[in-house]
Amino acid sequence: MSGKESLLKNLPFFEHLSDDEKKQADSYSSVREYKKGSLIHSGGSECLGMIMLISGEIRTYILSEEGREITLFRLYPKDTCVLSASCVISQITFDTHMTAEADCSVLVLSSGFFSALCEKNIYARCYMYELLTERFSSVMWTMQQILFKGFDRRLAAFLISEYERTGLKQIKMTHEQIAQHTSSAREVVARMLKRFAADGLVEVKRGLITLKDTDALKRMI
Amino acid sequence: MSGKESLLKNLPFFEHLSDDEKKQADSYSSVREYKKGSLIHSGGSECLGMIMLISGEIRTYILSEEGREITLFRLYPKDTCVLSASCVISQITFDTHMTAEADCSVLVLSSGFFSALCEKNIYARCYMYELLTERFSSVMWTMQQILFKGFDRRLAAFLISEYERTGLKQIKMTHEQIAQHTSSAREVVARMLKRFAADGLVEVKRGLITLKDTDALKRMI
Image (cartoon, rainbow over all chains, first blue to last red; front, side, top):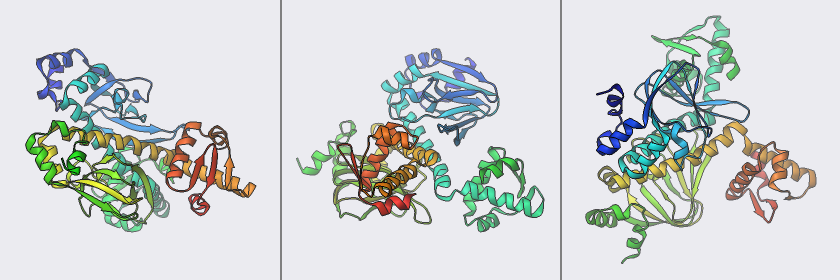
């Protein structure tokens, strides 16, 4: 069994493919390497296909005409994504962009094959929509934080004010305490700090928050 | 054939139901009436089920802790929606609210039945996720307008400035002209005006925009 074959078996709908479809999946898939920082998928310009991350990290974001970016979600090893095949999904009418946040190895099912498969095979189609529903939820969470609370800004403002007050880049506070200071909830603080950490703004270790990029945090306020 | 039975036949997955499932769909569905302004679905508090609008109009929105509302989309006759069954869809982790914008008649498939059906029947399940993917797209469009452009505010500000400049609630301008004034695109202006019209803020008829609620427009700025 080739390495690619064993990767394909990780696709949740693989067991529902006919023998022919399994063979085609093998023919129309490939493993691609992306260097850190490179663009993997970009709006309507190309149509990669369905991807499964083997190693590395991918950031998915939307881009305004003025160049402002909003991170929607991140992909980690074993995660699959079909927004990179959005050109063949008629229900997806918005553009997303994906960049490699680290050197990435990615299994790609070509968009043509994936599209034809989803048309014929209800299990593949159902999986595709299910995956998009999950993304819907994570995107809604992000959006609500930004739209309603401007909580990303509030938290950044609080961290910077602490830094300026104490002169220290290390902040020793529980999520509960920060929630009280920022009129938020412990769970929201925890999730946003995780997001800040993923974006390289802070590091969170054993209850200690270390500011890694105060300039970026100041720009958010 | 009862009226309800003929309504159930409009469900896109109806032909893929077994005879038993069809009988159950009949048993576990009902037609409900909602007066204009009444709450049909509210966050995590209740779990109505899958709905199909027979007549009237439903507005779906998210609500901040401070009470701010953002309209996500509207439902019109024959539209179906499963966000009203979100409690039985594990992938949906956000809360939405639905109110009747006019007197509504709604076919409801109970959440218990709908959940069990989606578990057993891949066609029903696939339809549910497909519908959510469509909502994902419409929500993304709304979000991008608000997040990136604050275009709802810019357009409201422009309409009010015209009103104050001329003293007239009627604005005779093409979408193209408004796009130029607001640094936007004709298509974006057209969609946002349609949204303003649905929200009762303006009326658009034969190229003439009539401001219907200047107070609400001013509050948006």
